Image (tube, rainbow, N blue to C red; front, side, top):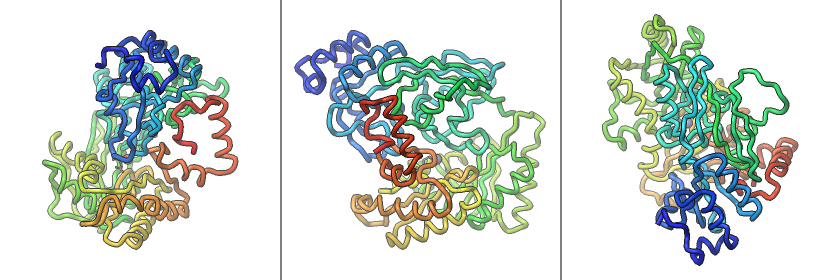
Length: 485
Ligand code: 2HG
Ligand code: ZN
């Protein structure tokens, strides 16, 4: 019964202070308050199946003013809230806990693109706009919104900003943070920061907008953003290469960078183990190379100059690398369909791993120069820790972010393997730490990695985070249990 206000005697109503749901219904209307268990269900588990939460209600405000008014009520009643975008978090960042008191808030109805300006190169998008929709709207206006990631068909602008998502094009365009000029934010007490300024220069006190990007909804709601657009690529070239080893992959990256850094849009690494999973579990996926390899690289070049000879650049660099023995084989697509197939081989890694059984994810980063050593040392440590398990490293070599994942051994109970998740993450993190890296490169902290944050970012850094949280959300009502333990 999504269209009816909840029965005041329902379990949902009982978990909340008397009269609150009615008052929220008065602000948000019948479509804005969902308490039917069947309608709540999809919002109470994450796609990885790591967490299952409970909640008395899902709120769906249709505007910033509605959300602000609802937050004033919730704040006064000390009700905890959990913002949820496309629910594609890798770390349980959008899940309520099991206590049944945390209200989930989705901004899916706030899905307007308020403005696109191809001269200022900006887009003003509301939090509920799907990332793919934002990309398409930019393209229609003759521009590019470059944030690109596997979950772009369901991830939302509010969500990708809240977690400072990275993705495939970070090597060229930066993370979500670098693509944001201004923000509109609803604070935990319902005040609104009206910061939708589309300025390239704006040194007016603390850059508050950057506090909310990457805060994973623990400081307030991002309700709309001014996003940076870029010139549309007019020349592109793509290649899938089989490479000799991890060092050869890095060396190939260097060759492209030395030749023309500005044309590198993505530089992705895939292990043979990951590619095998994609070829086995993803319908229609085919490898356009003569043989399977142990290491692959997907190189994507793009330029806004229509006369840029990127095919020539690609072939020239690959020839040199072939002669040097770094590249063993390469496929250059001749059509859109072939290009899409190559990208699928990379983008379907997460899905293929999910279908293949239990796996543990390690979203780590190291300085780019250390990527080969990190992959080798982590793989050895993981194979020693869990004999028969299969390291599946893949990801964004160009920016140093590798998903150092581990697939369960064949024939072993998935739950027993997952029970060792923390040992597995510790083994990877020990190497990553020695190499000056990070335990969370682009997926954030969520519920999964709060202990790691305390351990890695102790001292003044952690203390400052706590003080910021206490200043903005003294009652701890915004996305409790996420980021800070
Ligand atoms: C990707 O790069 C995503 O495909 C998912 O960040 C990574 O599944 C993963 O570990
Ligand atoms: Zn990734």
